[in-house]
Image (cartoon, rainbow, N blue to C red; front, side, top):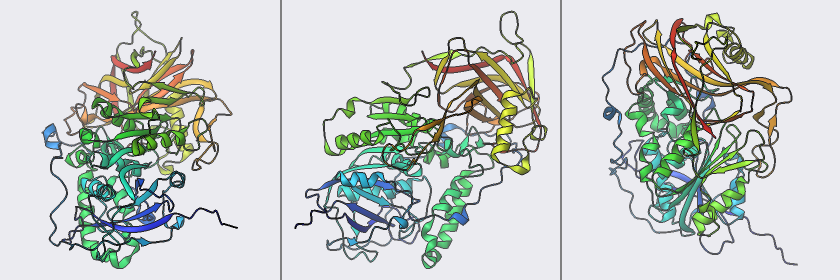
Length: 623
């Protein structure tokens, strides 16, 4: 009887020669690459690359967060022009090495075992794609175990190291069977057509590589990827990383991902270079001013979208407060402005995979997307570009729009105080003030980001008549579908030379709401979960927030003097949101200072006085 069991996949490891030398030893850095490809494919196959700095495990003991219980520093007014913070993308990070590896005869790659425990952050999607005839290609990148170099998170060097793997798959770059570099390995099993996919930092690296314009990269599928690192770690001149990760910053992530430390002898050989690179990252991230700079401009991939040659299927959670939805929307809009093919797929989850989200069709969409862009199948997916959004009223409903911005009109929120006091014209007049003083709130500094502590602070901010905030609430007679980036404009004076200004929009009304919590396994491939609906009615939900350093009132790259008591014009863009409010619900605007969940937490009490007739809340809505 013939055994009809299909042969297992071929698993190989190669070492791709990059064009950079980040460990400064005179040799071009090598990066270790694992290939998992069909054994019985016959013809050549396309490849899906996962650029994964977490892949070979991380330094959990090195992940030390910065102390955020610190006063905001008042920085003397700065004379910094926009051109001063622009990175020169025309200069390649690739170098001419001191030592050149000689030509080597072609030969086979090293066959290795695939043990899932050896790797992190590789989803089940790639076994599915393998069964459909795609090769999975996995690389940890610079500074990770078995590779050369140092981790320079988000840098052009990091992008070009991963780019080199695409070039090898396309036939334009060398790889070797082992670190002795005596046998060259060619990707002759590959069609030369490459996609990139995966989530978070892995999604970010897709954008970094795509914006180098590398030939062979036909499409990317970033899930919750970062298009602008500044807006991930900072915002408006403030240190402001992901919700739940206060005190995080870029140098910390680089340290966390430096898995070369797991080989003590190897790490000892680069310790001095590693420490120098950490010093450069510490200086560049600039926790003192938190200004945008050339360092951050280098890590802003939106600046070089015009270099992209590929399409993108951009997947993002609307309730993701790790990688905020702005990041996806900005990339989508930048690509569409340049005539590039892009689809934006927005779900109601947090920082999760949606392969198993019932009714989403995520896996089927990815299959069709890859078949079209890597195999040339005319399945119509390129005619389905635009924006698909999961409803927050019925999560099984997915609404599709031709694009993002043109579907919106602007609703100007009537500014009505919670007390309901208005002028004869229906608007508020006079001044109102709040005191940014954590000592006067129910939030206890010693408890930090305890869940109940944060919940009590939010309750007080949204629901109580408390001097730590100004609240304006408007009942919506016809309901409202907010979708986009809301803007808050106002004039204010503060009694200190600096201060934190924050705002949030809140949906107030007692009802059971859809949450972002999955009711099953969010890592499975198909039909494993939906998002839960509250069993007990909640009184409100925070829709979106925004933040600003008062000294960055005109731009995020320089500080301007603030004269205590003098009025200045402020504009805060809130984080991209999509929320449906039923008729009779109340929409509340909250103006406040310290956001205990997001910003630094100063000890200084700061009084902020607002001209109420200057407040304007512009909300993008779908009519």
